[in-house]
Length: 66
Image 1 (cartoon, rainbow, N blue to C red):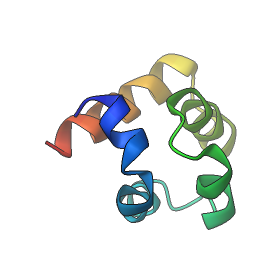
Image 2 (cartoon, rainbow, N blue to C red):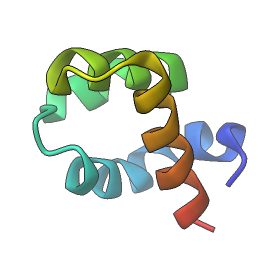
Image 3 (spheres, rainbow, N blue to C red):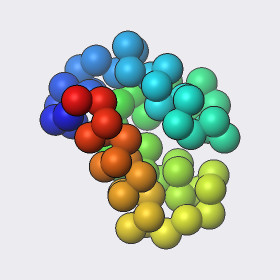
């Protein structure tokens, strides 16, 4: 799914993101407000993964939304 569409529908899609990345809090998702780079950064911090791995996870998740 196009990231602009994800950002525009963030309130509806936030629940799916919470299911995917349960270590992140509801407040984390509210603060990032659908911004991809912020999501990648929070995944890196919370899960201790590389930037490339966090990018891959976000890409996989967004592709499954289609």
